[in-house]
Image (cartoon, rainbow, N blue to C red; front, side, top):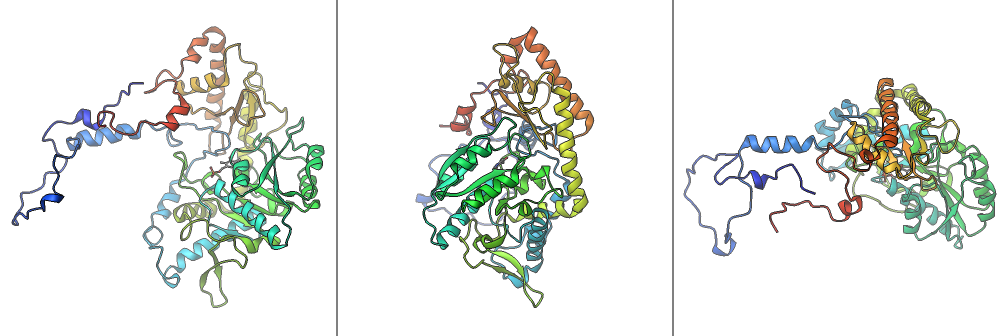
Length: 481
Ligand SMILES: *Cc1c(COP(=O)(O)O)cnc(C)c1O
């Protein structure tokens, strides 16, 4: 597809410069011949104004939460308060060198310690490590901890890990990376883990289960206590995929429910920008015997009032260099403080309210796959769209109306899935406008299906081959080889 944005090389004209250097007032030194270029570098020659316009234009081509509604299910694209950015840029945080002796960065360690405490309080876990760089790395961390826990007790026959069929793709990938075989657990008619199936799978070969609660269907596991009991009874441990914490902050603590270890997606729940894929942070909390296996270093407060970095006794080691993604930690801690305990609870309550409100508005045209109240997101099916129209067509047409499409075709167990997560930071007017547009598009799908098949129409590129765009992206000047 032809791009309508000129590259800098196309704008280039010989002799144009952004910077005019003054003529030299020192004698010229000769460069050794073997170091000198044989020919000029292929660099575009443009004016300062051309350059500014080029990059400013490019910056507006990215879709972002700062410009429009971004209801991408499972991703929690909430507003990122600007105060997070202000604190993350404070010189003491942003400019401290990772090798600075801990006595000289006590403030940074205090922030880590306080964030660990806050996350522990919110989730009901005794101990938190801030090391992992993302949710998926948190999963790997927790599964490695569970593996080492079983090994430390001489319990070496546990080779399988249970994963519900609604799970995020990173879940089976993480257990496979840790050397386990993933075993799928079915969902029942209400979108919960099927207890009978779970019971039939639980035996002494099970190392544990990875559970997302609320699950990726946006539903709270109604039998969560029985699920945990069943797995614990056969000697397995329970890993919590905490990506959906935004639905339950201040309402229920996974650690108190009986989860053994869980990650937080700071970039989702605690409002740090992640639209471009990072950087993120996936701290892991653990209770009971598992806490000794956490990766370090963990910030601790010693009896003399000094903060120290400590490696837990039976630690699985390190997951990341130095302190993890420290800038993300500063943003998340700022969010935690600025919301406060009651504010976090209110965020979750409003996230759930928004999702149920929006689900109600579109129920008749896009029925939720499970007819239940949802948590912070809901999953509808596009099965009832006219013949030849798929969820993907509807999603792409939304772009023409200025909305980012919801997640589509996930979870895999819902045909023609459309997964919508509005978050608590959107106004009721935005939710109304989005529902009205969905209604309009469904109408279009009946009278003018081609409009949907060819969408989006207004963007720089229309329907992309998404696989090729990821596998073989064109990232360089097409004119230079
Ligand atoms: C986002 C997400 C993950 C993975 O988290 P990353 O931070 O992207 O690695 C895992 N599970 C669920 C349910 C998620 O939504």
